[in-house]
Amino acid sequence: MTKKIFTMLLLITVVSMCLFPAVLADETAAEEELRTCEAVKGTVKIDGEIDAEWSKANVIDTYNVVAETSDNPVTMKVRTLWDENYFYALFEVKDNLLSLKGEKSNQDSIEMFYDEMNVRGERWTNVPMGGQFRVNYDNSVVQGDNIVTATKVVDGGYVVEIGIPWYDKANAKVGHVLGVDFQVNNDGADTGTRTGRLVWNDKENRGFKYPNVFGLCTLVDAPATAPVSTSAPAPVNPKTGDDFNSLAAIAFALISGTAIVFIIKKKLVKS
Image 1 (tube, one colour):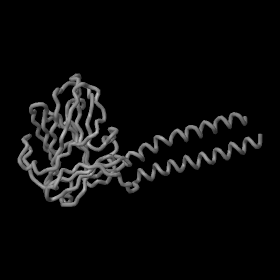
Image 2 (cartoon, helix red, strand yellow):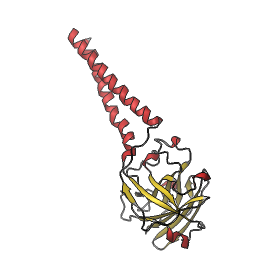
Image 3 (tube, rainbow, N blue to C red):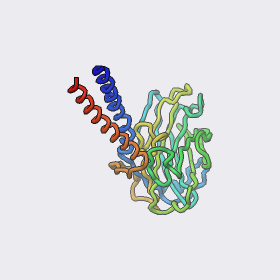
Image 4 (cartoon, rainbow, N blue to C red):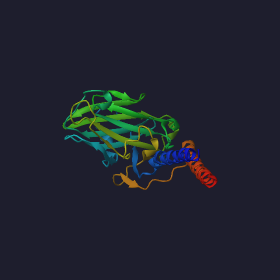
């Protein structure tokens, strides 16, 4: 009987220890470095044309190649503007092989992740004002709604303009900080399979699930003297309800492990 109890308790201990990496993985998602940008105030017509107003916007051309398995990689440049009605983004994508094969989610497209209040929630359910928006190069809005978009195929790629109406117009002010990320999806083999993606801040394709991996975009009135696309150490995020639950799980596992070890020792002494 003593050996059976020992084996059972040892198994419980091993399982508890195995849970640590899964819990800690969620906690470290927010600890990656954050890229920052500035959105200049300005109004554009969303028609797929690059208006002169875009020339005063900062150019974001730094990104992570999360995956690329084809011989036809892509590049991207993103600019941002804002006014009292919209937060705007312009994607200029270099892609020599455009594809609309297969599921729309695998076709050549851009994605924008948007957290208007920069709450940096552990889950999308913690983000009251925001969403994930995906637009294919043929202007099919695959994901998200209540946005204005336009696309245009150009030599060597395509252009996408997107306007996201403010969830709360009180946020349309100088100094307001949003959580954002920009992504380009590539079917580089023209087979209906996504072969790669470029992402501005997220390094591990977590944005669809974890909004706390977005970069930061500050609303400014005038253009910066130089393009802003820099990296900075990630701040420690305020603890949310999910953070508390994760910490509670770790604490419970540690306490349980300690209790199990005590019981094992006691049983061994009696035997």
